[in-house]
Length: 440
Image 1 (cartoon, rainbow, N blue to C red):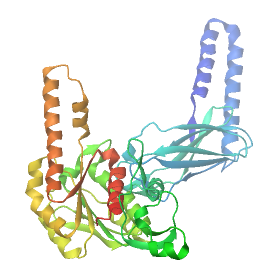
Image 2: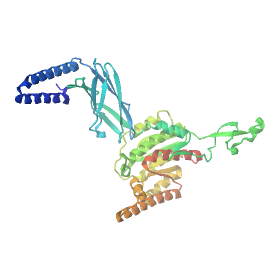
Image 3: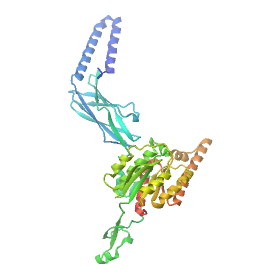
Image 4: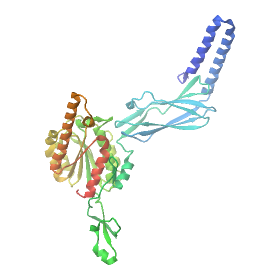
């Protein structure tokens, strides 16, 4: 019977009975005791078996899953277990979680009162987008006797999609609506001006910009009145994500492509909340996964579906093709945020003509990444000749990254140079700064 499992307690009891029989070989007076112990063990085993197996559905359990997993985030998985037995039971929960997590020692132990229900939680952090398949939810149940266990199996073959990170979208939304972001602490973005989209005339209060005083309204009302402006809305923002071979570089379990897609999701959410239109496309040898810029309610879902299973193709990125497609398909001036990764100044210069071509018609922001390993080398204190050599090389690469920033700036191209873990806040901050300065 595959549902029946013999526990260590029973084997230990049999061992003690065996010891009694061995001693009885030398001391005949112990033989009756050995017989009694064997009889009691057999009887208790039978009772334990009957307690667990007479009731067909003594345990009910279900795995409570979200509709989808969020890539790179901790996702809450819950297991609800109800005890229908009229006595206490101890359960060992073994959930067959997807193989991608490589967790071979999953085990939850719980003790449940008769006719009571419990809820157990655990976290899963996926590192790749795609499909994740769960096996069976196995509940091994023991009575207070503990000689045998009965296995219950539930919910076999459940598959969940893993989408770009969406769990923290609400957090970013609250920060962005207040124009505040965490960059090594709380940073208040100072408004350097306003876009000239008039909203209303209101009474002056302390802190209002005196340059916005409306003197005509002031003379009519006999009190200071100011013009109030709001950020211009319905501006077009396009997010371009490089999925060439340079974006496969891993950091903390996620590739640069995954970081970029997660940032694109967070940024898209903020853009839509700000009333602008957002669109995306991915590129390598050609542009794909295109979603035209829009601000409808379903836009974030469309973007999520488009980015859900994007993988790098390990090809050399064709920026010439990107330039042609941007020119043909994005006909109105837009903010173009281009996620890629340049390691050397020569790599940038090879693509500079295409980047300048995009920047002639659009406001272009190139987003590329710090190498975390190089940063740790730069900050280290070497204690041998090899360490000194490695630090000098790392500083050379870092200096070249700064030259890339200057080279792009020379042609009116903005840039964001950031560590992968800070990508979301850095990119959203750049978007908010461009909005507040009104330079689009």
